[in-house]
Amino acid sequence: GAGVSQSPSNKVTEKGKDVELRCDPISGHTALYWYRQSLGQGLEFLIYFQGNSAPDKSGLPSDRFSAERTGGSVSTLTIQRTQQEDSAVYLCASSPEAGAGFREQFFGPGTRLTVL
Amino acid sequence: RKEVEQDPGPFNVPEGATVAFNCTYSNSASQSFFWYRQDCRKEPKLLMSVYSSGNEDGRFTAQLNRASQYISLLIRDSKLSDSATYLCVVYSNTGNQFYFGTGTSLTVIP
View 1: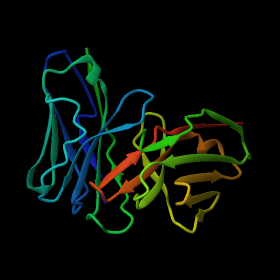
View 2: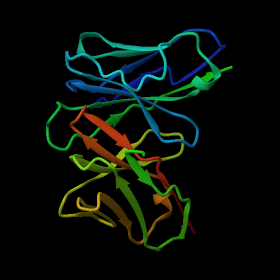
View 3: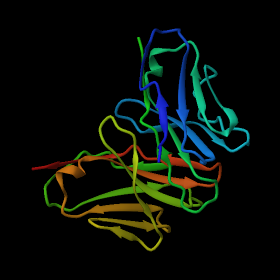
View 4: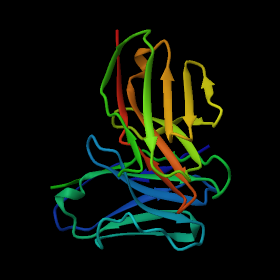
């Protein structure tokens, strides 16, 4: 079956521009997470969506970052007025229903963002 | 204090060696534990879940010590293909969050 997909796979942008990153989770997965990973670093949690509940935005580093999830499926992460320190790989992961025992996360291939 | 701490390595071991990775976590209410593997410039993928009684999958053995808040991964008879970064991951239903260690780098040398 189809896994988590993300687009674009690579994005190069100029400082100050806005970017939108897209994530298509596995069908039926109610939980969706965004992370970012800088070169040689661990995963940094950004935001979490669970079904129709209000998202957990506690990991967003600034108000330039926002995300939405339409219809409980596709999610977009938007970064406004990009800065060079935003350069990283942005990873999306989906997971089955909350509370369902061991909950494996399935990751997409990531979007590599480079801000010049 | 970080939620999950790992020795970053790198570990460079010869083929056939046994290598062990350790991880500690800070939240005693954590519920689920995992080891993920991440190849260079690739996304993390689940290697194995970690059960309270310990579990084995082929050459890989995972152990959990809840009292010490400690997780381990043992790889026996290392293969070249085992070269990767191994991520310790802890799940807490407080906020339904997964907490990732920074990973331990393993290189298996011919």
